Each structure stands twice: as C-alpha cells, then as structure tokens.
Length: 112
Length: 112
Image (cartoon, rainbow over all chains, first blue to last red; front, side, top):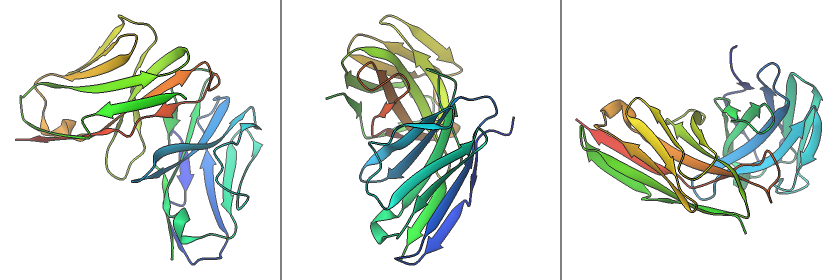
C-alpha cells in the first residue's frame, strides 16, 4: 500500500481565501483522523470519522473549519475564510479500530 | 483531564551514548500507549504500542517500557540517524476508543 496520501504538500494563500486539503486513507482502514501541528500547540486532533461518518469534531477550532468524507477513500478539510493563525501543518491519519494510526506526509499551510 | 507530559524537551547525545526519554501520563483508564518518531517535514511514524504495565517492546536500538504512570523509550548506543522528534500518545477510556492524546515530544539530536 502507498500509505496515507495527502495533497497538496504545500499551500500558500491569502487571508480570506478558501483552502481545501485532501486525504486518501490506507485502503481498508475504518477510521480517518485530521490533525493540526504547530510549534506552540503540538499535534491536535481536529476531527475523526468512522466508516465515513464524523464521530467527534470537538477539536475543530471554529465554524470556518469543515470536514467531509464522501466515501471510504477520500476526505477533505476545508477552511473558509482562511486566517493567518490557521498557518500550520495539517496531517491526515488512518487506522483500524483501536490500533495504531498511520500518518500522511502532511500539508504545510501558510496564510498571508 | 487526560494529560501527557514528555521530558526532556530536547536531548543532545554523542553517538554511542545511551539514554532514556520519559513520557508521564494522567488518564482515566489507559487503553494503550503509543510511541512515534517524526523526522523534519514528515508525518509521525509508528514505533510501538504498549497496553499494560510491565510490557516491553524492542526495535533495533530502541526499547519501550510501561509502568502505571509513565513510559520510557530507551535508546542504546544511538547513531546520528536516530536524530528525530519522539512523540508519545495515550489512548484513554474517557477520550473514546480511537482518540489519541499526544505529548509535545522530545527532540533528540545524536552527534558523531
């Protein structure tokens, strides 16, 4: 398996623009997770899905953030409108129930 | 509140100088403790899972151990390629079956 795939790897955008991050989990994994990593706050869980259904979105910072999983092989994290404080590395991870999570390479987002 | 604390924040070793990283946790029921390695610009890479006090896991120069309050990652005769940030995460009953709570990490630098 190719592992978790994320795109784009880098995104630079201006404040107020919409940003969409994409993730393809490992085939067969039931769970998909979106994390954000910053120097100040470390690795934070934003939301996770089980069988394409959002289970816990308590980590989503604001209504500007939304995530979808239309099928078992694709998920998106959208920020609209983006702000400079959203600059971070966003990771997608997937796993079998209760097992270790496998992370993608991340998307480095810079909002100017 | 479930919490994970890693120490030290940063560690500098000479090649061959063995040492240990600490991960202490306060959780309401531990389901599992995970160690990950993260290289700059990459996603966390899974190393070990420990489930019960007294359990040990080994991989090359790394050995992870678990007690009721903390875990250690022992590095024996490290090499420069062991330089990375090591992250500890716990899976707690209170957080849900699949949520991981990450510590801030220990940045390890091994010099030749």
